Length: 329
Ligand SMILES: Nc1ncnc2c1ncn2[C@@H]1O[C@H](COP(=O)(O)OP(=O)(O)O)[C@@H](O)[C@H]1O
Ligand SMILES: [Mg+2]
Image (cartoon, rainbow, N blue to C red; front, side, top):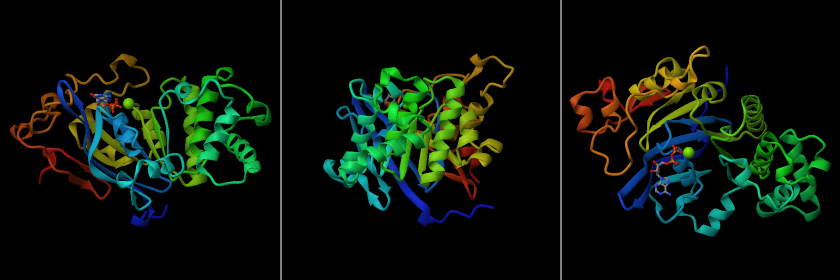
């Protein structure tokens, strides 16, 4: 039995986070009251259809939302006991990369084509860590070895275009962990990689996590990956977390009709992959949302009340909660 986590283990506590975009169609509520916490050494998966606010949520945590048109309009993000939404831009620069890192979707765009990979890893270490100049290279080599790069002495001189997609992803991972952050965010890091490399990469992330006791936030639209790699999972719909809980609870006993539909749409091995996410109807656009539950028009279990009032969070078990009127006592 693993020991039960206590509140002291919480490294990241997000409370009622709201991020809006001003567009000519109106205010897009991309993140609309998101709350969750993350403990040391824990992996939280965030799933949901495209456009539901997963990326904007994690960009908000890093304060990297493009502004304008985006703005964090409310909430608290406590990282290691400090509300980072209250920090100055300069203070926030210090947090990024040192306490919290992000691995973006496309490894090619996060690496600079004109610098060797050694220079890029060393740069990340130099910016965020106060270590003697002559130790920087050793540190970089060490980190590259940790992410499974062989013959590192040779590889550091290579440029991104000389490496395979899987290798580049490892380099981005190396930069992500080079300063031993408390929290590492990976936003759909596997979409551009083939399946074998995906599996290797996920194993790598889990290894790094164990070694450094990282809190890991893992965004994906693949429930299979969540089942294999995450401890807890949050399901997002239209800018809100509609269900959150331990992976096993949520898989065995999905409480929200949206989660049920997502799970039902996961293709079995022998079926046609086309069926993935074949949920009736479209997700709503995130401006001028009507009152009530945004999933109501697509919901198989909809009631009158669902169109009138957004449901509060109901507990399903000690470790599992969901916002759905079907759960009202
Ligand atoms: N730069 C932007 N300008 C206006 N709206 C945006 C911008 N970026 C994202 N959005 C809106 O935020 C919503 C959530 O986007 P995103 O977080 O990228 O979704 P995903 O869950 O696919 O990662 C989108 O539906 C989009 O309408
Ligand atoms: Mg995204």
